[in-house]
Length: 404
Image (cartoon, rainbow, N blue to C red; front, top):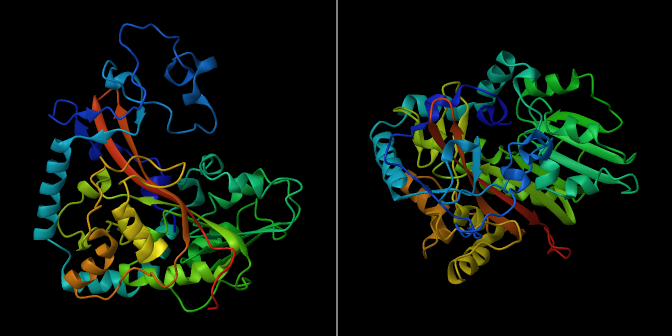
């Protein structure tokens, strides 16, 4: 179930903060240059098409920092830009408006009772051409390069929320491993039909099937403890918080000891969340889109509790405040919930909403890395700024695991 706003190319000018507003970008670069120096222009800041990383295919994010001397509208995007307090005040005001006009009880039941219906409608209305291929995944998750290597041997990948195949087929296009198999699963029957009808569908290397990650069964053809890699890219946010525990349990069941989860999803404060209007809020941080599909916006500490268990969340809270892992970003200024209540954030939300969806601490995975990825996109012609926020991580099943 890939996210339509992440994969499509809609007009996002409506999700924008006008440049004339008082909201400002905050410089978070760890290497601000001396304004008196005249260094050679690095490739990622050059407008020369021969030497411009922005034009590489795929472009590698995370290399263009916004410095105090920069013109915000010189480039289309800046990496690791943390919005200032004025933006957060604006966001909190928006949240209060959303809470004042939530989804009605009738509509809440309608959208939560049969979410598959809304995803089937979505894929019936949108062909595979609606989505962009995720060519950036192998740069963000090096394990995806390893599994397609010619001498990698037997490698099995499970993609959950495979949608129309815009992750699986780019991986297959680069595959040189004769023993690679991808199990591409989606909640939607229509999505699976789109994958199976794709000209690149090769049954030798890919098997598409319908699967609900929160169910009590494993995907078709998947045995317990058989997966080298599980891909969860903009799919966990489509689940209700009541489904998280089963989903984590199933992922853990699928993984081999030492197997890895590649995770990317929405972070709290993303402009798509902030701009939701009235009658879209299902519960705290959980919304329904205009097409009936659902989306949740996560906090880093919340995900640490969900995937790493209570001990991981406690360690994060009692530590120095920085995310672990070489790919993590500095969350100390990201306004994430890192106080003593963070480790029980999901449970607190459950109590607030009358549900029981505590973090799945009895099914912990090792958190190799987890961090907030912030980006400011700009529309140079209209002088608009758009603050985006995602959370990305890598989780690993311990090499030695307890039974069950």
